[in-house]
Each structure stands twice: as C-alpha cells, then as structure tokens.
Length: 310
Image (cartoon, rainbow, N blue to C red):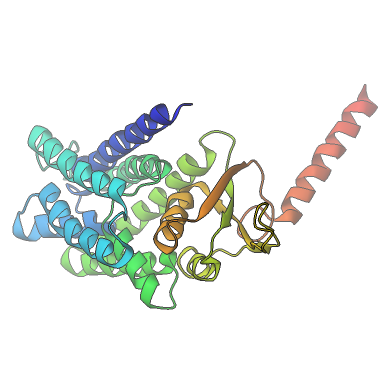
C-alpha cells in the first residue's frame, strides 16, 4: 500500500467511524436519555435539561479540551483527533436535523430503552473502533484523561474510567438510576465492540515497536505512565558512530499505536521508530502463556485422537 493510499484509508476510517458514532448518539443514546460517558454523555444531559443541540454541545465542549491538549502536548497533538471531533459533531447535528431528536423507537415501551442501550453500544463501538484504527480518536474526555494522567500517578485508562464514572453517576441524579445502569451497559458494549474492531479486524492483534532516541529516559517514563505498558531496553550500537544506543522495545495493542507515536513525537522529534506486526503476543497484558499452552496441548491431543481413529 502506498503512503497516499494509506492516508486515504485512515481518512476513510475517521469519516465512517465518526458517522457510526454519531448515529449511535443521535438515533439511540440521546433519545433514550442514556448518557454513557464522554463528551457525548455530557451533551445528552445538556440537551435534555436545556434543549441545546447535541452535536453543537459536543463541538463546544471538545474544542477547549483540544486546545488545552495542544497547549500541554504540543502543536502537532492530535490533528486527526480534531477532525474526528468536528465530524462527530457535524454528523450528530445532521442526523438530528434529518430524523429529529426523538430517535427511531417508541420510548413508551420499556423494551425500546434496552434496545437503544444495545444498539448505541454496538454503533458507537464500531465507530470509535474504526477511528482508533486510524490512529486518531474523537477527542473530548480522551484528551482530559491524557492530561490527568500527565500530572497525576493515574494511568490514562484509569483517568478515563473515573471521568466517565462521574458523568454516568450525574445522569443517575438527572434522569434516573435505571438510565445510569443502561448507560453502564452501553459503555460495556462499546468497550467490547471496540476491542473486536481494533484487535480482531484481520489477524493482527498488536504491534512490536522499537524506539531509538537521545531522550530515551523521558519516553520510557511516559510509556509507563500514560500507556501503563512496560518494555525492554535492548543494547544497541550506532553503526557509524560506534556509540552505545539503547533501544526501547515494547508491544502495544493496535489502538495504542497512535498514542505511543504522540508520546515519542512530543518527547523527541528526531526519534527513530520501527513498528512491526505482532501476530501472537503471549504474556502479561495479552494472552496468558498458560492459556495458549493448554490450547496447544488440546490441539495435539485432538490430532493424536484423529490419527488413532484413522
């Protein structure tokens, strides 16, 4: 695939992913009053209390967070994420203008809320998963979580969980406890679907990344803090200089490659990165070695059984 085609594919993922996410918000989540975390969750609460357009709320809430991210992480921070944020806001407003704010289902029926929680989770999960595959995100509380992780001992994942938990808890007071529980269900479905899209789209589940940098110490600290990932320092030597050049080797899930690239870029613009496909990763944080060993033993046993029967 040429560089141009690769960028076109990334753009395709961002556009389609943003549209699917917006469809989940506008058609199911917002009409059912399911504030499932993130900026979209806040926008849903604002709409049902102040009658302010959901898509416009997403934009107005996300842009200041993006600018704050740029101020902290640098000018090149997340330009693709800005595109994702703008498209999510635009598509949400367009769908609301086309379909209306009441969605597709009859919410006088209790089953409609459950169907909305599931449908919103699947659509938003597919959408966010595609956007993440492009190395971008839809901005919002993702940026806030990264900022919190930068200045506290919390990892990005933990910070994001806490931010979403506050939003869902707020919806319990504004809407009802039942709606907050439906929102929790939607968040879970989104998470599972994102993992399926990002990790199971094709045969590749993770990337092996080698990083060579004069600012190795800063980069490895940020990998530990922001990604919650470990790694290995390999001994290397410059071919021309003959000087020692330690190499960071780390394995990250596909949806973390964009975040890792941002970490390296803002730490050292002269850094050198090599990203390779990892077809199978066994060990802590991935598939347990014991589980893989038992699966392999099971395959051998089945093969021997077939040989005996034959």
